[in-house]
Amino acid sequence: MIEAPDDPQDHTPRARCMECPHRLDRLEAGRCKPGDTCVRAMSGRQIERFFRENPDLAEDYRGDKFWERRAIAARYLSQKRLLELRNDPDEVVRRVLAYRLPVDDLVQLIDDPDREVRITVADRIALEHLELLAADKDYLVRQYVARRLPAGRLFRMMLDADREVRKTVAQRLPVESLMMMTRDGDAEVRREVAERIAPREVRVLLSDEDWRVRLAAVTRVPLEYLGDIPEDEDPDVAAMARQRREHEGHSL
Image (cartoon, rainbow, N blue to C red; front, top):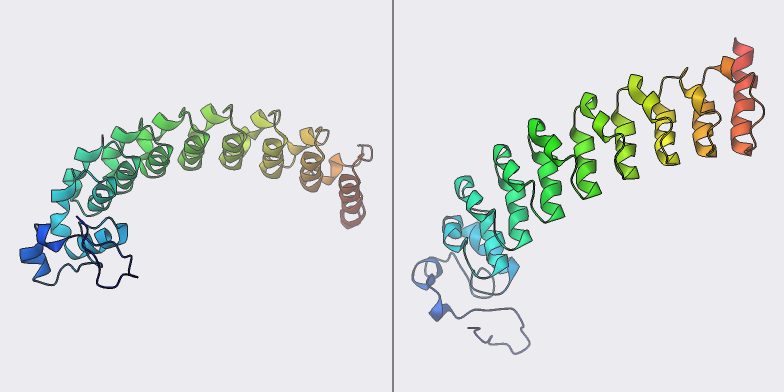
């Protein structure tokens, strides 16, 4: 039930204190306040203030019918009780779990239907379990995996279906292994390769079909490999090659 405010212009959500189980302890002790710090009001801000003031009551609301009340209560639950909410029907509640669960318990959320839950899991889970998410259906989850996996374990992700995931792989793969990505089907990925691969190996990209890749290659290739190639059809690539021949050639 909602308690009407004294001021008709005041639309702040309020619950009826007379129907609240906390009126005889928390209200009288000044640990809740109608329209400001209230667990019964349909207001996330008021509920948050209530649990901040009364964290010991969070456990009483972990099964509440209102999803926002459960989600906020979950922020204050002891970690040993958090796992009881792993099958909560609302993804917002489970997102709180993904942030708060001990790292060792996150394995239980790797198949969660909500992408935000799985993204948080990929960002926090122990490295020995991270590869369980390497084939996730969502590219952003896989990208988080590619950002965190040890570089030597990224090989399986070089052929990922998503360009952004492969770009992340190209940014982190051991330099000596980048030759395997010089034929990637996306120019953005090949440009990442051109910017990191060993200078003597980048010459294989001097004839790439994309001018941005060729520009990155021309910028980094040893000068000796620039001398025999014809002037590039792209003016920026051609200008960079001429500039390097003129300036670096004189210093040899």
